[in-house]
Amino acid sequence: MAQVMHLTGPVLVGPNDVRSEAWVIGGRMTYAVPSGDHDVTTVPGWVLPGLVDAHSHIGLDAHGATDDATAEAQALADREAGALLLRDAGSPADTRWVQEREDLPRLVRAGRHIARTRRYIRNYAWEVEPDQLVAQVRVEARSGDGWVKLVGDWIDRDTGDLSPCWPADVLAQAVAAAHEEGARVTAHCFGEQSLRDLAAAGTDCVEHACGLDDGTVRSFAEQGIAIVPTLVNIDTFPRIAEAARAKFPDYHRHMLDLHERRYRTIAAAREAGIRVYVGTDAGGSLPHGLVATEVAHLGHAGFTTGEALDAACWAARAWLGWPGLDEGDEADLVVYPEDPRDDLAVLAVPSLVVLRGVAHPT
Image (tube, rainbow, N blue to C red; front, side):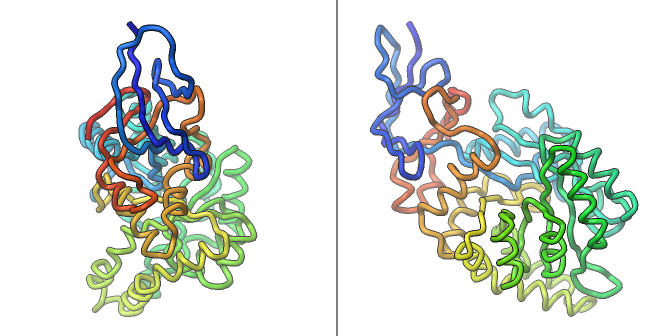
């Protein structure tokens, strides 16, 4: 007798596509009532496609690459939170094995960060000089899943503040090289100037992007450059800045200013039509499983519940080239006890996660 999961709904297939019920048969979605004899499991609740964490670091902790057991625990924490599609935003660990595990979230890898020598966190990135950047970008473009991750700026101890890591002309050559290799480029960026340089270079996405101003907001909107603001990470700026107060006062003031205006900055991006996607910066210094917290931050920045859900769900999956819950799609979904369109806090309490058609209680 065939195993069937009956989702009694509502099933939120898209922002404007709500079905009253659905079934999972053979691991795939269907909206046709099954015929014949079946062993049916009834699942009540509001159903969303699996959430997206578009800035995740599987296999990375505060010291660099983790062992496989730690990486597995990170991925399982994301699965339990309902994040079933992860875009890796740089990891020194080889995590291709994660993609082979049926019980772990789907992973879109960007390979390892590329940073300027001694201008990033130790043991995280390939550290190269400008004359090596283009060649390293080509290597990472070929080894990842269509993404390259650059470190666009970091504290410059000579100037005592955030400063771009790359000459603008070299950055433009690197982005062009990635595009020639068929990869998109994203970049870590806190400050204002590196955002200008990245826009001029034609990047596809920027992580954090807390230094957006009127000029770069217009430029990003015109060029279709997406941002992943990682507001849960920006929340840590006061602590990071405090450690540098005495030695780097300009950096201290700059980081506090970026933090203070974080919601206004992301609201301006939203109002200009910039595509915003949910990412937590999990790994490194932050735990995994924070996707619901990040969505709530978008609500604090003025996003409607529908807009915030789209940034974590339907639009984010389409941006990464992954399906949702259409007829015949693999069943990657999350079930909630209440309607998340009424209250984003519901995302923090999923009642069931289904990955590749297999149910995983939370």
